[in-house]
Image (tube, rainbow, N blue to C red; front, side, top):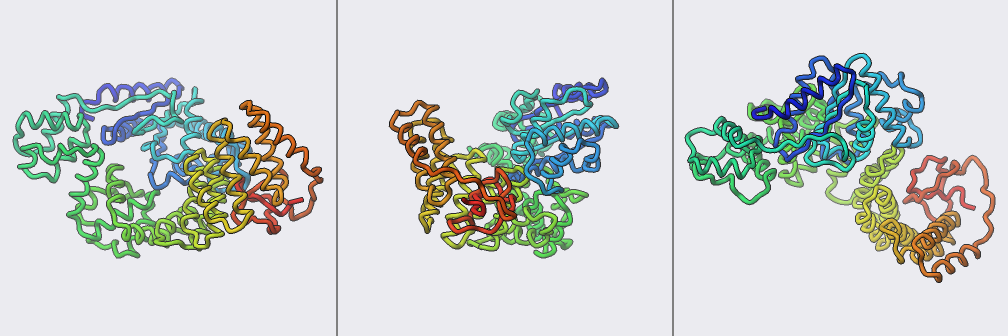
Length: 551
C-alpha cells in the first residue's frame, strides 16, 4: 500500500459510514497490476467488525449465468427462508435449487437486496466483487441493480474492475492510477539488486507509468546487464502482456508437473481443491514434484485454490498448447459431478473436444436449456454457439444454428447472430430450415435498426413460414406491419403487408389436451420441424418452437 494514503482514506471513510447505519458503494477501476486488488484486500482487513462476502470474476466462467452472484451469496443461502416467497423462489430458480420458469430480473435483484439487508441486521456486511470485467453479465446486472438501491442497510458493496462497465455506470467510483515518481522509485529500489543508472531508473518508472505490479515483477528474471541497460523492460508490447511474459519466463523454470498443476488450476474457474487435485491425480501432477517451492509462489492451495494475481492465471492458460488444454479440460470434466454441476462439466467437455462430437453437442444443448430456464440469455447463446461448432450432421447443425442465432439475438450480439444465421442457411437441408434461417435473419435486420429493409424482409419471411407455422406467421406479419408503420415505410410495403394479413385464413380456436404447450409458450427448437414433435409440456425455452399444438 505504498503511496496509497488517499485511496486508503476513501476506503476508511466508506467503512466508517456503516457505523452510522448507512450503506456505501464504490467501483474501484484502473489498469491491470495498478493495485486494485490490494486496495480491496485492505478493505477486507480493515473491516474487522463486519461479515465479508467475496466473489471474483473468472474469464472462463463469464458464460455461466449468475455464477458470480452465486459465489457471492453462497454463505447466505441458509437465510433464503427469511425472504418473501416470490423472492425466495426467484433466487432458488436462478441458483438451480428450484425448477421453475425464469424469474424477472427485477425480482432477482430485489431478492438479493433483501438477502443482504437481512444479513446486515445481525452484522454489517462488506461485499467485495473483484475482477468485475470477467463477471457474467446476468450477475453484473443484478449487482448493479442492488448497488443503486442500497440506502440504510449497513452494507458496503465494492467492485474492482479494469474498466467501468456499462452496468455500473453512475455509481461512486475511484480510479487507481500509477504511483507518484518518488513512491515508484522507492518500490523499484526495493526489488532490484545493484545500483542502476539514474537515467535507466527514470525510464523504467516512466515506461511502467508507476504500475506497482510492473515495477515489482518485470525486473525479476532479468540479468544484471539487462537491468543496467534497461533492456527487457522497454519493448513495445502492452504492459499486461509484458507482465504476463515476465511471469511465464519464471514459471518456465518449474518442473513439468508443477507447470501442469498451474494449468489445471487456471482452467478450473471455481477454485475447488477437490476438482483441482482430482484432475491433477488423473494427469500425474499430484506428486511432491508438483508442489515444489516455486509452485506455492504462484498458487495458494488452501480452502480455495487462488492465484497470486489474475494475470498469472491468464498467462498460464493462454500460453498452454492446445493438446495440454484439451487434456486438462477433459480431466476436469471427468472429476466434475454431472448431477451437481452438469453445465460446467459440459463446458469442460466442449473445451476438450478436438473435433465435432455429437454427444458433447447434445450436452451443450441441454445446458442451454437450463441456462434459459434460469434467465441466462448470454449463457444460453454461448452454449448453443459451441454446440453448433461440435455438431456432426449438417441438417442438425442447421437446426441448432437457427437456435443459436435466435438466442444470440436475444442476448444482444447482432454480429454473432448474423454469423449463425448464415451457417443455418448454408447447411439447411429442407425448405423449412431455409425458411427459419430467413426468419431469424429478418428479425436481426429489424433489431439492428428501424430501416427500410426490415418490412419487406419480415413480409417475405412471414409468407414463407405460413405452410409450416401459421401462428408464427401471424406474429411475423404483425411485427412487419408495426415496423413499416413506425418507420413510415413506403405505402407499397404497408399495402402488401395488409393484403397478406387479410388473405390469412381465420384463426381456429386452439385445441386443449394433455399434450399441448402451456399458454404463451412458443419455441423454435433445433429438433422442431414440419412433422408434429412430442409433447413439450410447456418446458421449452423461448428460442424453441413447439409443433405439438399446431392448428
